[in-house]
Amino acid sequence: MSRITRRAAIGLVTAGGAMLGLGVAGGYLLRDALKYVAGGGMMGTGMMGSATQADMSSYMNLFDRHTEIRRTVEAIDDGIRTTTESDAPDLVGQLQAHVSSMYAHLNQHAEVTCMSSSLPTLFRNSSDYRRELTLTAKGFVVIETSSDPRLANAIRDHAQEVSGFVRDGMPAMMRGMMGR
Figure 1 (cartoon, rainbow, N blue to C red):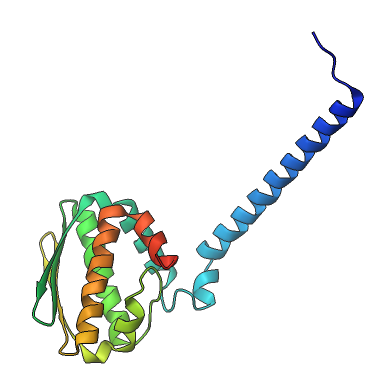
Figure 2 (figure 1 turned 180 degrees about the vertical axis):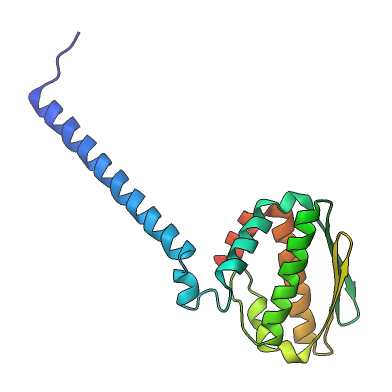
């Protein structure tokens, strides 16, 4: 068995202390970041726009359960028709409440800026395109159209972003927040 030198022992203790210090500091940074997001820090600074704590909780639940959601997008003249559904009755209610809440934000010009590169355009031009929401037994159907080609493209872009959220869950949201 070989012996460790005094110099090597001091080096190991120093390195171990440094690693412990980094771990503790990293843990505090992570804790503070999570408190900032959960406690309204991002919303309070305007990064999330008018999204409320209830909105954020709903978004997170929908991301967690994305595999239980089905979505189809059909391109139509000047826009899209989407159908979003689930077989879980509680999730159907959450989906319907979510889209109704988003439409209320749009109608009030209360911008929600998180998770989407297309939402700012849609919010800033919310009076310039048509939205039709039909609640169904398993979810909802949305038809959104605009005679403005720029807005019609933003409508289609947003439909694809939401489809990505349904398909991929949280990773799609993170890509959206990081600007892809």
